[in-house]
Image (cartoon, rainbow, N blue to C red):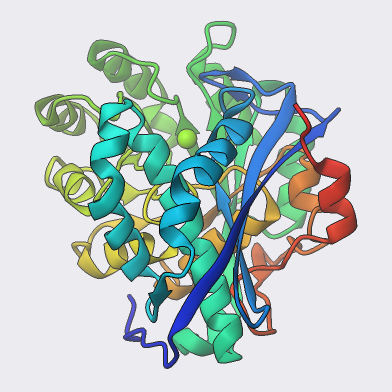
Length: 381
Ligand SMILES: [Mg+2]
C-alpha cells in the first residue's frame, strides 16, 4: 500500500475555473440500473493559474441526461467565486475549505452529493495542475516502480459475452465484470455462460447495481456461488442498514464490494466493519484522487480497493493512477463498451496491453483533451 507521503513544493493560486459539458452520441452503452445511456454525457473541469499552467478533472455526470450542464451551471453560479484567487499547496486543502464554506448551502438545496461530485472533479484537476506545475508525472511524484496500472473488463452485457470476453482476454485481462440483476436474464445463466468463455485462472465479478432486496440478494448469490465470483458489487442498496450487509456477508462465500455510492472515509470504513471486502471509490464522485489515496491509507489490510470508473479518458486515467499507487492488489474498472469520450477525446490513450494501461510519462496527472475533439463533443443542450 501507499508508502509515499505526498508533499508538493509550490503554492498555486487559482486564477480561473471553467466547466466543459460534453456528450458523445451514436455508440452502444452498457445497461445500467438507471437505464441505458442513449448518449454519453460527461463534464470536465479545467483549472488554471495566472501563469497559464492548467489542470483537467472530471465530474461524474452519467445520469440524468443533462447532469453535465446542471453541474456546469453550479460551478459557474456557485463554486467559481470561492475558487478564484484561492491558494493551495496540497490539492486536498481545497475540498476541505470548500466543504466548510458550502456544505450547508448544498444541504439546503438537497444536493449534497452533487456537491461531492463537483469537489471530486476539482480535486483531480488540482492534482493535474500541481503535478504539471512541479514538472513531474504522477508516477514520478509517487515513486511508483511501475508506470502501468492494472485494469479489469467491466460492464459486459449478457448479449455481448461471446464477443467481448475473448476480445478482452486477448488484451490480457483476467477479471471480467458482468451486469446482472435484469429481469430478462437469469442471473445464473449469464454467469454460467461467461464462465465457459473466460480463460483458465481468470475470474468473474457481478454487479447488480443496488437493485436487490436482502432476500433477493441471498437467493441470487446462492445461485451463482458455484462459479466462485471474485466479488459481488452493490448486492444491496448503498444505504442499507449495516445489519443487512452483515447478514448477507454471513449468508454467502462470495466477497462483497461497494463504493461508487459511498461518500466519506467513515462510511467506507463502516462498510468494512460490516464485512465488505472490496471498496470501489470513484475519483469523479467522491474525494477525487486525494480521497481515494486517503482511503487507501486507512484501509484494513484484508480489504481491497478497486477504483470504480465509468466516463471519459480524463477521469479514467485518474482512476488508473490511484490503482497504480495502491499497487498490485488493485485493479481499476475500465468499461468494455464503446465510448468515444474514452477512446477519442484525449487521443488513443487507454490502450490495454497485458491487462494494463500505461500512465502518462509527462508532467501532470491526466492526458488533456484534444481541443478539436473537445469542441466536437461540446454539449450545447
Ligand atoms: Mg457498479
